[in-house]
Length: 306
Image 1 (cartoon, rainbow, N blue to C red):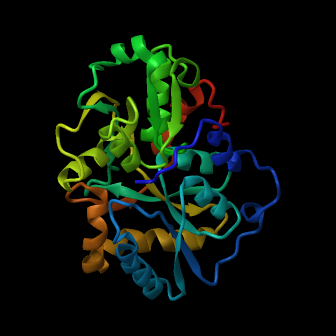
Image 2: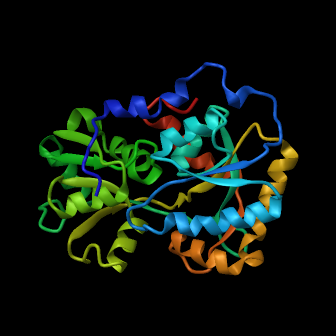
C-alpha cells in the first residue's frame, strides 16, 4: 500500500497539465515516429503487469516493423504530460484522465475493453466504509460529514474522484468544506486497504477493484461495506497521442484490434487485467465520453474541462 496521502491542493498540481499554454510536442507537425513508446501504469495488485504488456510490445514491434518501448509511468497526470511532450505515443488512461487529455488536445481514443458486439465495457464507482462503521447510508454520511475523513483515489480518476464527487455535490456537500478532512491515496488499492484498517471513515473506489481484491484474498467480504454505487461508467481506454499521423493511427488501431486473434497466447496475459470474461479490444470513440464530460463540466469547484 502506498503510504503517503496528499491534500486537496495536489489536485491543482496533478492536473496542471490542463492549464499549460506553452508550445510543446502536441502542437508540432505530425510525423511518423521512428519508434513507438507505450506507457504502462504499475499496479500493486498485479506485480506481473510489465510482463503482461511485454507481449503487446513484441507483437506491435513485429506488426509495425519498428522498435517499440514500454515506459513505466506514475499516476495519470505525468502520463498526460509525457504525451503532451511527445515522450509517450500511447498510454492507458482512466476516463477522467482521458477527458483532461482530450480537452487540451493531447490524446484521442484508440481502443477500450469491450465485447463481441463492439460495445465497450463499463464499471461502477462506490463509497466504502469499514465493516464496523456506524455509517449505513449516504444520509448518514451527509449528517455526520463534519466528523468524517474521506479518501479519494487518484485526482484524475473517474470512479475514485470525479463521479463520487459529483454525487456528493448532488447531496449538497462540498467535500473540502463539509468533511473533517479529504485526501488522495493515489490508488484504489490504497484506499481499500486504508478503509479496511479503519484509518479513514469513507473512501471512493471502483467496485471492480474491490471485487478483485476479495477474489485474491487481500480483503474479505466482511472487511468493508459498500454504501453507495454509481450508474455504469465508461471504461478506461488506450489513448493515442493526437498529433501522430492519421495513417499511422489507423495502422495502430488495426493492430490493436487484431491482437487477441493474432497472438492469443499474449492476449491471454492481458485479458485478466480487465476482470471480465470474454473481453476484447474494441474501437473507442470520443462520443463514448459525452455523458461523463457533461458530468465533469457540472461539478462545482472543479473547473477542469473546457
